Image (cartoon, rainbow over all chains, first blue to last red; front, top):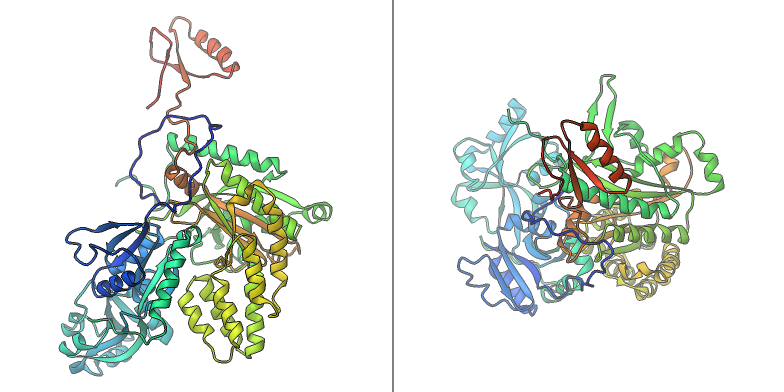
Length: 247
Length: 386
């Protein structure tokens, strides 16, 4: 069972029949929102501001990780951790990329497509080694793929019926094929420039991703503010075409 | 070698064990008041047998015994109870007279990835009401669930209730009207199970689907509230040929409304649980301060038939550990008798050891808790355990 709480002092026993003070369900507490730092950060803040939230101090948070404003608390998180904070109820809701959601595979509610932070998952290989990956697959029966997203990569290769060995990396994935450690990479790209600069060419598309507004299932059910915010965000982003994530 | 337990399996030490015992006793006593009888099923079930009642998720913990049989550690209690009732002699006849009512406290086992802070063994408290379907039976299950949660000491919890009927019927109607493939319906169900409203929007934006069907599918997930939610849903699906499930829900809710539990029960049409076996009402319970579901349940009228006995069934289960977690976050919640402050100690006199045993028995007969001190000591004292 989950227990994130600090060890508690043993409390004095009380009679089971003592009436409890009625409590208003959460509504007086500030709404807790996870905001991903990095490429989605600025646009997340813009959108939350337009939605009428008090985002003062969020643009220049310094070393602060939590910003407490009127009626709302912002938690500045690593993009890949945002789904964890939301699913486990550390926050009521948050913004994160579809990519992080797919990779985390956690139980949370995907409430709105925010249509910014557009990027694609692609398969790439060194331009110079064109054909080598296929050759390796044909003669060794296996292909080695480096990625920061092992779950997405695995489900993609499973779906196309190709058996691969996946190497989980934490960054600079492009290096793996360049030094011959892997045949290909599965990575996200917005404009493709990082891949090009490292002499990698895209050989396949895996899926497209944009930023999403997500909610903790418990919070969505018992705190109407989460859905209200989702509706406001949906109205703001409308149906304009997705905007690319600046890489 | 460090003597550890497997990941996600833990020891229960006295402070926690006392509290668990107190809650279990309280809740089970409450369930007994409703005429529910205790039941126990084995820890292990035969894999292929349990599979009759529904696809076992990857989360089921499996092992192979020395007969080469694939065994499953029970991933819930509903499937084993359905298996039990359908297969054991005598239940079919008893069902002819009146429904069966069972209650249980059993640990269940589910595989979890490492580093996800999730237990692989946890305790479910729940009930099964077998042999009766309809609005009144549904209401009994929900009301009892509410009483069970209250009996844990929780004051602030919400049960969100809906029916899978409306969505299923609406999807069927959409497929018929829009001449859509059945895979489309499966995708819509899957998206709603995942609570992926973005994927749902994309699926619903199908030009073959008339506008008011699109609107109904999208808006239904946003409907929540009391009696007015049923009206809102009724208006939304009016004329779309999917009213059956809704009417039964309305009748159940009318019963619930007139009970003390009504303050804790909300209608919420976004509730579609990830089990595929529900056939009617479905509900989940949440508590502020607990980001995870406390528990849930619903109606699964076809499950017993899969095990060979055609009988309707409904029930609920909640996680004891989750309820305790929620209790700790709720102000003024019941606390266990931490430390056992009412324990008295009596020393054994070396010259007449039997004396202390005799005296302790007299005091225990008066209902006092007495522990004997084996170490020589000169006085009897009250003591608080740390």
